[in-house]
Image 1: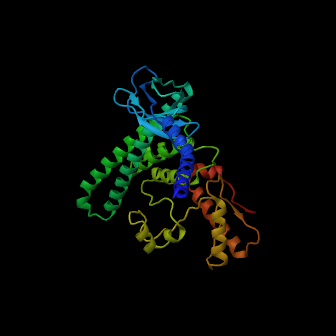
Image 2 (image 1 turned 30 degrees about the vertical axis):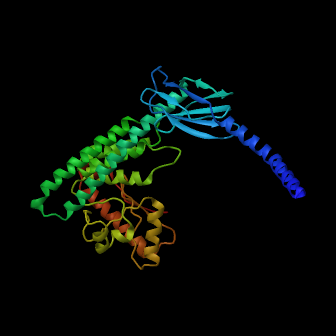
Image 3 (image 1 turned 180 degrees about the vertical axis):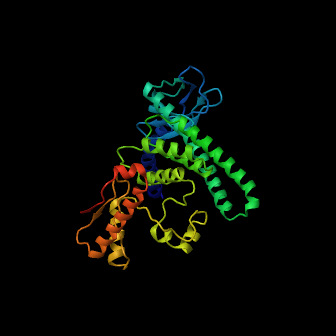
Length: 366
């Protein structure tokens, strides 16, 4: 019996010895966590209380992180904090870090730490640019919405009886004018060196085009081309749009449309399905290619593979009726081009001034 009691006592003693260090460590840890509080007021660069800013506290040793938002008077108060060095990041309402500071805490006590936010000139510039960008984007997005509305109304007009178009036309004008106002506000918020100015200018031109105000449309299209970043290279799509508008401006009776895929342009069915608002009806009979290479390839393929009779190339705008013959031409090609040159000369001959200026018809081999 005594032996059993002795063993039990030894086991209890051993257990207490084992638990002792653990209890001591836990107690030390809890003591380090509690009892420290930090509070104060955050001031903006002008010395006024900075309300609704976020403070992010990070312990450099334990890596504990917590956040606090200042109240309406710029005040803050932390929960229990363990001792050590704490980094403090101050974020504004947009989530941007505007200031960084720190504090070292030792012992269990109350700390007061007022924070005065100091912003460098670089930060001020960045904040100003961010504010301008935010304002610009708001206006631009609103302009896109209004433009899409105007564009949808334009499509409805193409399918609306003539006696019912006035109301829709008024809605289109109002939506387009609102879009122009928004885009111009976006443009005003951009710097002169902003590489996206051409996009806004292009949008304004599109709005004027919806209203059939071609003078204004062409002006803004040309501005968009001039503002296009030179590092990207020429904007061929934009150039094609401007060329279309210039042609319409030169001859309002000309039935012409802008960029259309080749197979759709020559098919009345496809054209009506894809572009019911297009002025072209029955398919196009003249195709204008984006460059000389594309037109030359298409012409050669039509003649060689499609079995078409190709006549040309025909030079336009020359002082005299001069045309070219390509290498490897057949007799029929020579006759066709010579005939065109003769007709050119006859047309010019009816003009007294031209009769004196033009005295020869030239056909050259190229």
